[in-house]
Image 1 (tube, rainbow, N blue to C red):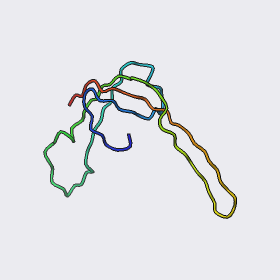
Image 2 (cartoon, rainbow, N blue to C red):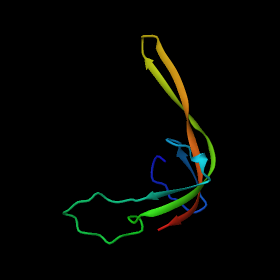
Image 3 (spheres, one colour):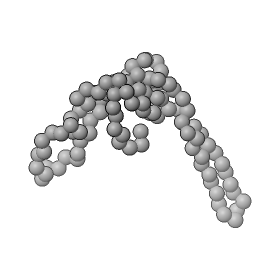
Image 4 (cartoon, rainbow, N blue to C red):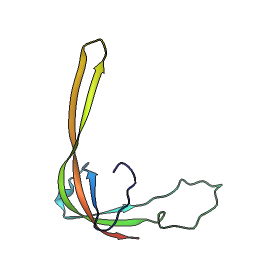
Length: 100
């Protein structure tokens, strides 16, 4: 995911498939923590729902290719034009449970 996304049970999320393939198991879990940068001069805040660790459980729905990314290299007046594209592998995961 490029930026923070609100997750709910039953929502479908597309993740970049980097590292081992998610398709080997039908269920996957991940720990997510969000925290503010620590600053000794700042007063301690009481914990909120967004600063506590969460456990997200989901099941792999599909493994497919994402949108095509085009790379164009161009130098003016030099007759230099290069076009190259690729599609990154994405894994679609359906969120089944979120524990706080």
